[in-house]
Amino acid sequence: MSSAHDNPSQSHATTVPAGPSEALMDLLSCNAQFARTHDFAPLQAGQHPKTTMLCCSDSRVPESSCGETLNRVFTIKDIGNQIATAPGSIMYGTLHLHTPVLLILGHTGCGAIAAALSDYSAEPQGIREELDSLQPVIRAGLQKHGAPGNDIAKLARFTEDNVDYQVRQALADANISGRVTAGKLAIVGAVYDLHALYGKAGSIVVTNVNGQVEGSALGITIQRLPIA
Image (cartoon, rainbow, N blue to C red; front, top):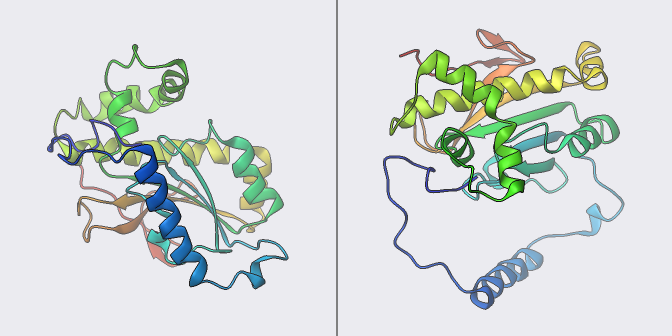
């Protein structure tokens, strides 16, 4: 989710948003280029993704961060990368498309987390409801970390906590956890590092595998932000 809270250390961009016509023409122009440079015949018989990815709707967290995603990634987006607001789509990817990985991808500078930390009572009902479902993460995070204020690294700890919470939510579903127990599915929590807090900006950093938050799993070293 993108909001005034996306990066507490920076103000809004100074560029004026495009009007509807200009924005649509830009979108269609990019699509025309995409259509010219891809072969769609292999896709017409059906999809066979390897990963179901639940990520934040924030436009700075593109599916292309995983490379070419056509027929590779079944993508679900919502604000705050939440299981609760997209259960059917997640089950479709893991139980019907049988992807061996469910990737839950948060990101540094998450506007949904920042908004859930603030007074959002004046927001429309739909936004309030989605931010309400983040409150278990917010309450626990405030006890553990304190309020982040303008500290982007502390806000990222709330992102890690949220990813952990969403992994637990996924594991609480008997159908999904059954596939994990059978070795047919791994639930991977990760953070898209926009702010180079873990290393290189733009990297996907694995922070949780099936609830494991330290050591290594699936041949990957699990990384966490240092405890302040």
